[in-house]
Length: 255
Figure 1 (cartoon, rainbow, N blue to C red):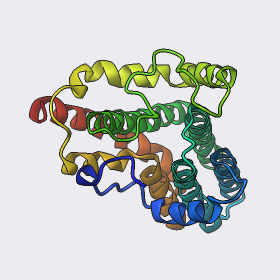
Figure 2: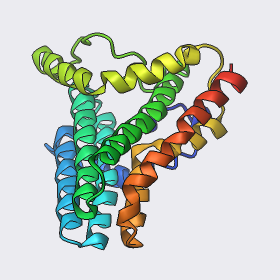
Figure 3: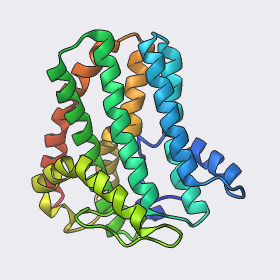
């Protein structure tokens, strides 16, 4: 099941784990396994990748980074199969992603002895990249009656959905807001009018999917396999230049 109606589906370069995620979700749909269990598994997969990076097992680390992407797709697929969307899962997933992203970069900083300033710049860059992709993707989903678990502007505590506790949603939202507010507001203020007008063309969504977390992890995995670990942090600093390119294209050509 896609987050978009069929006529608006695009080639998402960051979503290569979707097919594997669907297989896992189908296998678990009639079990007691929940989407939150799968989210926990992708956290574990990410932590194993970090341990492998720190110990020089780069190919194994690459495997677990890709597995993390597959499990990341599987939790959402399972939620849709079981018809159990939740804000708990949405915020748990996002909080885990941000923390793991920082730990991934921290592990590269440790093994390369890169400047701490560059580490922080890379982290800010990688988060802004993911935010601009998610911003346009969420807008697209809301424009065409797609999945609406994520909101364009996360500015207040949502009402808990069936099967989840309001207290849990509130706590996770507060954590999410504290971690993401700077990135979300930065991108929002750079393109406030993005939700106006027609749906975005498929070529634009495919292009910006290079900033999706799955594609970011694929790039990291590739650099690990090629033993280019010293370039990971500098790469993601430079990779951020396309943020202004995509926003410029949207504002000038896709009004």
